[in-house]
Image (cartoon, rainbow, N blue to C red; front, top):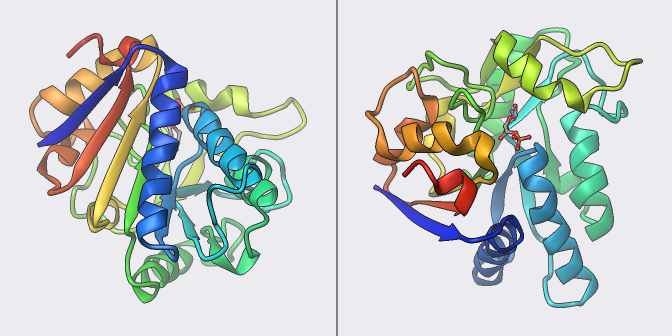
Length: 242
Ligand code: GLP
């Protein structure tokens, strides 16, 4: 069952998510955190950066694994998820780059790279806390519907709906990739704890399906209902369909 926490504003919800993560970090300084990108996550990282600057959070031992990455974008491209993580979180907290893991979306053999990345998560001891956003079609990471609930980290084709939802991340000079490497649903479900965060009315329907609908591959996030330790932090707009 998903432990639902509703907040009246987006600011309150994202601040709560940040403090939830930092509380886990305090208990385990070398926390292995699965990190997501997307507009939802930006204020969460901003809150953690502020805590770092205020000297109330220590990220020096934190290890981060990105949930996904676009194929064909080098880490130096500002539209890549690696660069996004750098800009919003890694650079401001001064984390050791050796603690930041992301699938190599420029690898010659992308299938082998996906398998290597999955094994690297296992080698790190598995993910302690997995941060997740949700797509308007219910995707988690880039696991599009119908999702393979047994799937490990893999190469995926993005749906037209997701490409459209994410096109704002791309400036005119960058061709939007149509493929990505994503942690698989089973990889995500292996995390010891999951924190799902959704804000805004655009996520209302996806959240209602994910948290209160049937568990079905047509809503990939609905599998989270079967995880033993999962919390959803929502603002009122995202929670309004529940
Ligand atoms: C993207 C990412 C997800 C993210 C989701 C929501 O496509 N692959 O990891 O959680 O879509 O993004 P946003 O927060 O911008 O709505």
